[in-house]
Image (cartoon, rainbow, N blue to C red):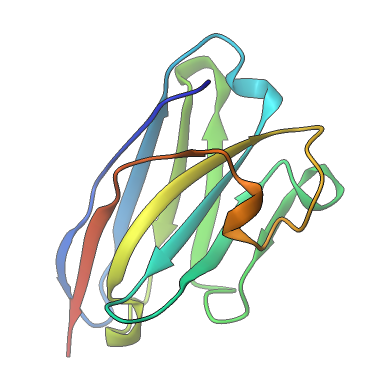
Length: 126
């Protein structure tokens, strides 16, 4: 099973940018759908973005479309989340997740992913 380690979180002012990284172990990284979820205190873990998912490309939550970009570098076993124009409501712990390409179930549900990172805190001040 792939193991995931996130980095890149921190404190940023509203309107600023951050780039999260998630490094995966193993030699079959390209065979996984990769996604980012986030969880604010007292709330559910929500979908943010996925890559190699819908139609083999990318998909985003409506709340981040046009501001966040997910990408991957299979040679480096790494998936990125570039976050621009950050808002206070983006404050959360961000988690990287993985599932095999042939897995079934909604890409938007955290219950269909079987590997998770430890999470990285993103705090956006107003």
